Amino acid sequence: MGEFRDREHIKSYAIRATRMSAAQRRAFDELYGQYCVPASSLPVDPHSLFKSEDHPVYLEIGFGMGDATAEMAAAQPDVNFLGIEVHRPGVGKLLAAIERGGLSNIRIIHDDALLVVEQMIPPDCLDGVLLFFPDPWPKKRHHKRRIVRDSFVELLVARLRPGGFLYSVTDWEEYAEWMMDVFDRARGIENPFEGYAPAQSWRPGTAFEKKGCAAGREIRELYFRRA
Ligand SMILES: C[S@@+](CC[C@H](N)C(=O)[O-])C[C@H]1O[C@@H](n2cnc3c(N)ncnc32)[C@H](O)[C@@H]1O
Image (tube, rainbow, N blue to C red; front, top):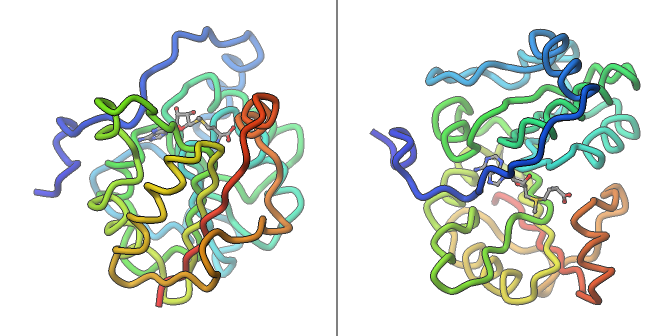
């Protein structure tokens, strides 16, 4: 049995109490069946979830309200985006954006990414993994909740195809350093840059990035490739 399989693992999120708007609820109720993939303990080839099965698949973990996901998917129709998020209003909001934009290259899994990656994503199949502004859990006693931890990064690396990338961005300096240490010691990925990476031209700004910038925090990017 894998580390995250029994749902007893240390959670990397706290469910926020935010209520769903009427539009998010309608989208969730009416569009879930069309664009969401029910969480399962069986592996599924992510490419098979999309109309264009031969396009690369980027897995986005913790897409929040999904604004950046919708923007990337509209700008890159030749890439398929598989988003994972536990926050229900965010899933509703992204579903509404999919409908509004006619975005056929997004699928969503509404569940805990630690479980989904372990159980549903087969090895060697992802072209990219996106982790934009993961919860920094700044208090020392909460560091164990950080999603970037050795065991999860080891799983992510195994799910990437050779040459695939792991791209993480944060406004929290100490978490950036923490992630750099975890990525540096992970077997099977390498940093093509000296230290932090330049912002990738295709990465849109995100809601949490705006908050970080407004508070005067610097954005740091980590971009590693599977060897
Ligand atoms: C700080 S927010 C960033 C949201 C978005 N990426 C942005 O930049 O605006 C982190 C998000 O990750 C989600 N999250 C954290 N751990 C998760 C997990 N294990 N599985 C799925 N989503 C998770 C949270 O619900 C939250 O929406």
